[in-house]
Length: 111
Image 1 (cartoon, rainbow, N blue to C red):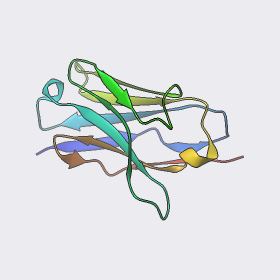
Image 2 (image 1 turned 90 degrees about the horizontal axis):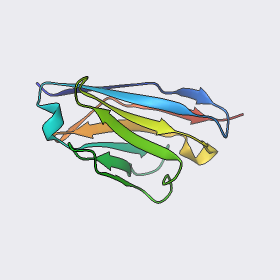
Image 3 (image 1 turned 135 degrees about the vertical axis):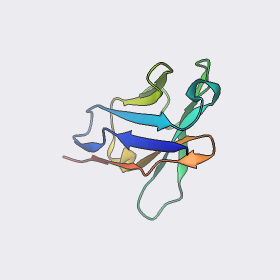
């Protein structure tokens, strides 16, 4: 069955960086777009970034220029490099692919 497992979250100071990973299994990874979403406490889940199987990317305006989505089709893994983190980036970050959600990983930006 399709399975997505996120990792790499944690506590970071404002201005810091984190890299999230999403390890996929149960489907032909290279054939599907992969996306990252996030959900802050009390807010709706929102789109962050997406990457097609061939590497085309798109970003939400509030992360453009700070976050970079990438993928390694040989490792069945998608990544989200997050730089210049702000307190408002605090959220649970979810990976999505083939109509399936991962379990999420917490990112907390605080001093």
